[in-house]
Amino acid sequence: MKKIKRYAFLVFVLSLVLFTSLSARGGRDFTENEIKNLVSAIQSENEGLKTSAIYFAGYYKLNHTVPIMLECFPKESEKNKVLIALTLYQIGEEGGLTKLMQLSDKERNRRVRNMCKAVMEQYQKDTNQQI
Image 1 (cartoon, rainbow, N blue to C red):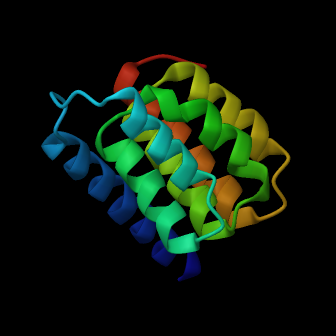
Image 2: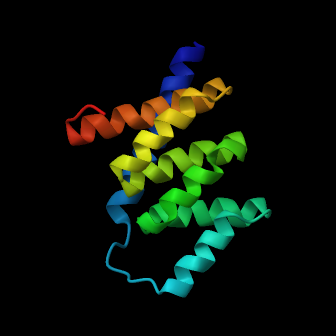
């Protein structure tokens, strides 16, 4: 029963990510200052601000935020680690996802490891490649 709930949750989350990426506004140009503000928010101690910043980085597919999220990944909460994995999937930068898999292999939390693995499997299916 637990496996069914877990897989249902994974399917729900991945479908939510796919739906969000279809409706994302890709044409917006961001100034250097706006990107710096978003990076500062990702590094913030305020959990709500940090969570929102990570979400918006994926929503607007901002490649500039990938290194910062990967740097922050090991010290984040379980919730933010999962959000970072989903955000990196939305951005779709192969190098970021590869680094995420390396980081998640060292992860103690089983839920985070499973979500990172599911995100990577979905990315591989989407791009028809092996990383």
